[in-house]
Structure formats: structure tokens, C-alpha cells
Image (cartoon, rainbow, N blue to C red; front, side, top):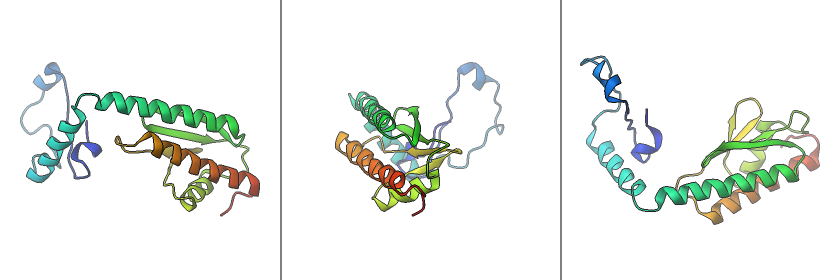
Length: 160
């Protein structure tokens, strides 16, 4: 199943399957909520035209590696962070169980510094930049996250 970014922010999804699997489907066996709307389909065609441009995915992979390295370095500098993980541009840092703050406090502190991050599971905070993120934006995001972590470590209470 493909969705979310496929429609460029509009509701659009696609299902990919092998010919063998598709042969088992009969009309009416698979429905779709967002199938075939002209505006969303046009947005999807535009998104695919951008993704299929030469070098686009190579740049995305490179930026994912840049974010990975930056977050791993952040974890090395801060004992309150236990791990950096993820794939591509979908990344997370894990707040250590003995950190003087919890993940919601880190989300709030990051927001205070101008960075929007999300909770991810019990101890993780996720970073989900767009595929068009630049190296400079990655550096700025990690800098803001570091400011938030540093502030929380210094407070020892973890509340904002």
C-alpha cells in the first residue's frame, strides 16, 4: 500500500501487488476510499514526475544518511539519549530510561525551540522531514533538538 506522500498532501493511495496475487482478486474484493478523484490523481502524477527525476532519490538517500550521522553524533554527546535509529529520512532518537526527562518533555522543548517532532512508541521521539529537506535544514533541526536536550538535561526535572 502506498499513501500519504503520494498525493502531495491530498488523500490518495495506491496498492501494488504481483500478477500472481492480483489474479486472485475478483471485482468487488478490494475497495478504495480515495480512488480516482481527478484532483488527487493530478497531484499524484505531479509527485511521481518529481520523484522520477534523475538524481532525486539519490539526494533523498544522501540526506537520510546525513540525518542518520547527525543523530548518532547527538546520541554520543548526550547521556540522556539511548539510541538513534530509523531508515532514510524517517528517524528517531530514544530517550534513555534513566534520563531526567521523558519523551513528551522533549517534544515540548523541541517545539519551544522551533522544531516539530513526534512521539514514537514508549521512549522515542521521531523526526519526519519532507523528501525535499536540505542539508542546511537538517543541520538546523539537529541543532534545535540538541538545544532542547541540553536544556532538559540541565533542568534535571524535565518539565517545561
